Length: 330
Image (cartoon, rainbow, N blue to C red; front, side, top):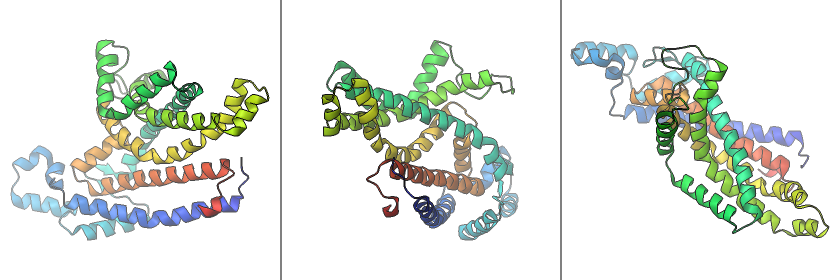
């Protein structure tokens, strides 16, 4: 591992943080602009069925109370200045402050994504190494073929298939939610049971990328001269694989970790919707369909920050582990 000076790490973090500021400003502005151009009416979404029998005067008054009668630029500026002061506004569709909505749901989304990502990385590494050990073998062909098939399969299709097989046909796992029907008590065993399907589906959607990257990286490393030299010195195949090829072959995976964050968030949105998982992604769907400006802007900002943080983490890991990479030049 390269011993990069911590000042270089600090400078990289500060540079990326400064770069993130205009990105987040543009993203939030774009959210308000797109929402303003949306065909969905936030007033009718807020009023629900009551809007069907309401006269225009009542709807206009409600529109004024919600603040959606003003230009979107004014709404964006008001939200931005309030957000910088710690007030993210109030969600019309959730009927509660945006900060509370995020606070209640962030833990469950983080748990789902963390478990799925860890499973995808670990299982992808194992399968990739098994495939790379003997290129062209039956194991290699089976692993790569399965990876390509899963890579092309939409995540919502995998989710629906998992519900049909494990919940409806085999009846071994719950079809969705966080607790059993008719109960609002969360227990550790029940949480694990309800987490298996959504986390498993999300992990499977990310698995092909890690498997193929590890297979390619480890396969290339096994063909390098240092690894051949280690074999010529009589080192065991396990030592050669774990001590030499695996470390070099996993370097490309570090950059993949950051680049997969957007796909992970997109996949989580679909998975949470299919499995009724009470996370951030499902709230994003409700905010988008109801044109809930404050909630939609806050959730989009959170997702963008997660993507930027993922890219930063990948660069830091790559710079700290690969001696050929200098953090000062990143």
